[in-house]
Amino acid sequence: MDLDGDPRALADGVQLTVFRVAQEALTNTLKHANRPTRAHLALSCRPGQVELEVTDTGTPRAAAASGGRGLHGMRERAASYGGKLEAGPNPRGGWRVHLQLNPDAQSASR
Image 1 (cartoon, helix red, strand yellow):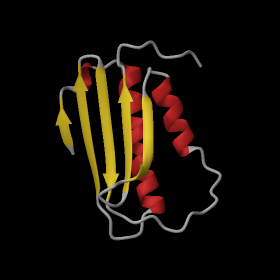
Image 2 (cartoon, rainbow, N blue to C red):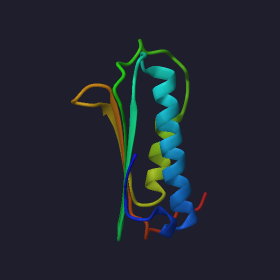
Image 3 (cartoon, rainbow, N blue to C red):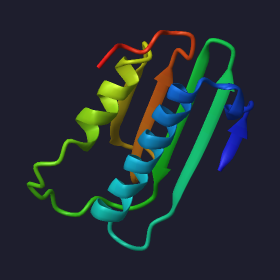
Image 4 (spheres, rainbow, N blue to C red):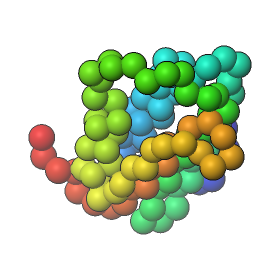
């Protein structure tokens, strides 16, 4: 894991959002990537912007109709802090999830 900045300085809700997106991205790696695979996390916490990138080296298994809400839920979490989430094949191989948040944005009420 690469870390730039101090995530402990982020508001609790932002910390939870970053944690849950990382957790879901790693869960998806375990569920959907052929073995062997490696995962890498990079987190940057700068004033006014938080970025998380989760990549893996695995080739995706054949798509299965899981009916899950993983990517949708990650996008909702990103939007709640004025951010966005991109997920898809990594040009270097494997899969990539990239989260950008505005830690100063007010979370949308649920």
